[in-house]
Image 1: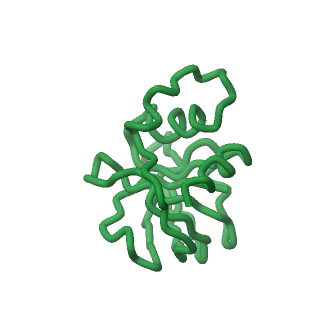
Image 2 (image 1 turned 60 degrees about the vertical axis):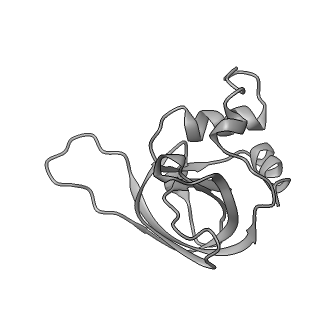
Image 3 (image 1 turned 180 degrees about the horizontal axis):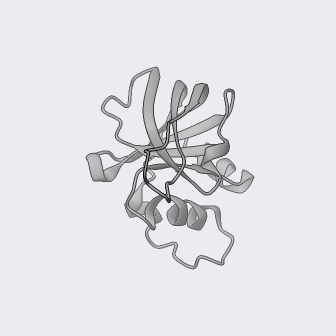
Length: 135
């Protein structure tokens, strides 16, 4: 299971296309059929968790020539399967900063908000179960 934090202009859409998204924490392993949780980036005016979906297409983005170190990027298409029924974003996750406590809310804060960049990240089963409680 995965999460993406990105600009989402229409959280009510049934289909989302994300081009050349940065991947971290195992996000580069995303594949067709995977469950993904969509977070509308607060950096872009979003409100955090907005939807859950299934990945319907994945393609690796080409690397830029002449740049030695590059974070892998992928383009993904997602079909929405559910809308979030409760708010979960930077404000709700900010208190969870004991990076070694093993809590799913701490994992989400670490992977999504410790760095401000938009990204696709891999999630543990515990974090996915925690997110399922928001639907």
